[in-house]
Image 1: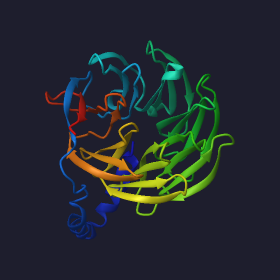
Image 2: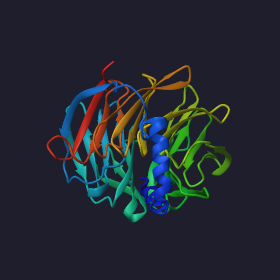
Image 3: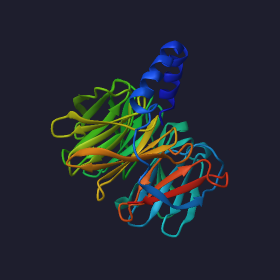
Image 4: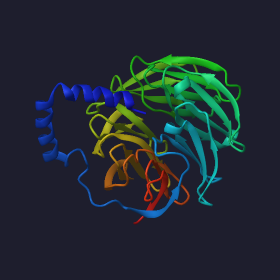
Length: 346
């Protein structure tokens, strides 16, 4: 998740120290050093739960809201942790998933899909037992995942491979590959238009793909974006939210006109996005530790608060029923890995 992007930016910065210092001065003047200039976070602590394993990197998380089961990719330990958020307990740990990045639960299928990046494979798990029931080859460095329910297909983002692998969710057979011409970020399915949307972070644009014939039918430019990685949709209001990790910027894209209609500053290195459609609230978790909360009114986002939650708090999942949000972090209050739970304070 964005490791290649970070290396690229470090190399550029090493060759332009003087320029970077000037840029920092300008950014501090304009936006508080890359952080949003806002009030305190509208969240408060609802709980903290110890997680198994070592204090290594976590990655994506996916929630089966009806059952209260949260699946967390513990990348550094090559395992998926299944958590009952209602009982506040770990159900099981599913091991030997090489450098697992992406994780996606599809409740209708009782399946959990995970990208084993170290093996360039997508692994299928039984949601009820945690058993591995299938796997399929992907492109290079599979990361995020999305589900197309109309065709029963799983899409895996091959970040450094610059492509999407399309896999039959029932059989594990590879149906095809979509080449995108640059390093890719996250992918999402839009049921209203019946299209897949993909961040092409190597081109700073959003690709719109027809999932029936696996062709790119549109490229949406993202002015003001450096390296679009995070992606979430509001399918009712016809909006896409795009996080640009190179310049701590969040863009709002109108899915009717394919135009950027809003820009917000968020924490440095924004990564995972989670949208609570019932509350019209977007959560942006950043590598640098802050969580930025934005509320949607009249199809416009407003930053309602931002605060440092924890180092490495770059992953978020939200429960649409309770409106609680969850953040797996390498180090909690007692120095062990933990799942942080937040609730709306207002």
